[in-house]
Image 1 (cartoon, rainbow, N blue to C red):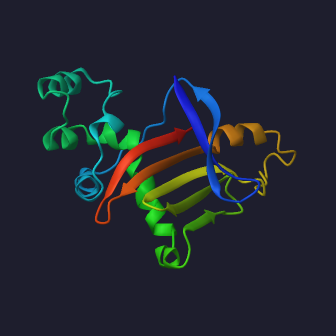
Image 2 (cartoon, rainbow, N blue to C red; image 1 turned 180 degrees about the vertical axis):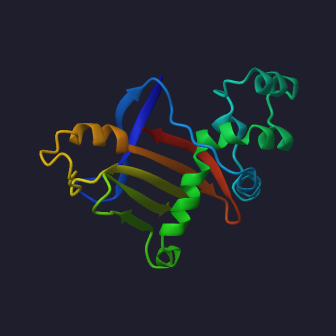
Length: 188
């Protein structure tokens, strides 16, 4: 069972805020390139506790136990597709393509929504800095402006909401030199 959170806007402040929205029977998984995994792991260390407890691979689990419940570099590279799916590394890569990080010099929160009129889903990205905490969020939701030309009555709107709605937030601690991942919240 997965507990799902979404990034919602706080009614009083307008700030993105994680909110519990549903329970589901399985997490969404995506696969990405091993090179990115190595670079990500070098620059943004991921604690073993964040991604390995739920890897459903007997080979990984056996090797993990033999290593004293530690994930080695070779294990990380070998099982990268599964690990990256759990921590959604590709979503982080996209976040940095769409967020104007220069704006973070003037403000503690930057948000971007990529809405394309003829697509049922839109993407959202945000970065928040609160003291030594850095929160990175990506997600998608149903594009309420979308008009399905084959279904003018929009009878599929609930389907698009189910299909489109997902979000991931990564919370980091910044020690002045490096980011240290504290936890990941996912929905959808």
